Image (tube, rainbow, N blue to C red; front, side):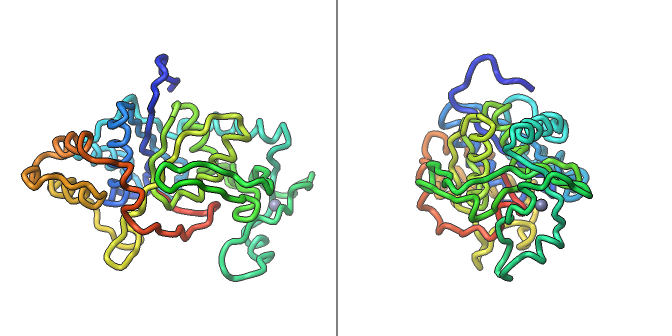
Length: 313
Ligand SMILES: [Zn+2]
């Protein structure tokens, strides 16, 4: 898929991983990014992040697309499947290796664990293989980080600054098993698709520092980012499969869509209750200020390390 001939001033996207059916948390991300794109008269693309076969569930990709259709969320252009893009990711990694901005790493998980100095959680990669020339076993590829903070402005969370060296250290862009890492695939494809705006869950805020870093390293443009507060359940847990979020009831899309708008902070008039999602989205495009999401929920601190996470992108 190439870039459009006509440069759009707004191209947004929803990029789910096919690790299960769409649940209310991922639907909220889809709806918020869709409405934000439509409010800005932009395009809205769907990208299937199917680069991690061991975690994928057969049939999940088509189930997600089916759910988006049932919720009246039509995407522009064809769906981009990341499983078809391995050569582009490999080429980007090779460029970084050739120019000494990435290196091969043969550390095993067991070795990295044994080097940990605390039990508080994953520590930044200590750079063990930065200067190693010979590797006796299969390798991952890591990109070099530095002590220079990565700064970006978030549309919903304000100014951000992160030191990757202190949080993740040099992070993996190609895994030892030969699969591309999420950060690399995401950044290469955002550039390929000409994405200008990324609206996604705040659980990915830490990943965004890595994405901005990779964009700078690969000389790719940085889109505008807005990280949505995560919708939480009654006991403050993020709604996901792990915390028991039920699959969406596709027979009740009108009710689900109406409640979802309310959870996003919109106040659809009660006479719209029972209307098709399409009608609710039209109302929201002209009546709801998505910028108001910023103060809508208490910011949930991400629990996951930048290098290892499960996600809704
Ligand atoms: Zn290593």
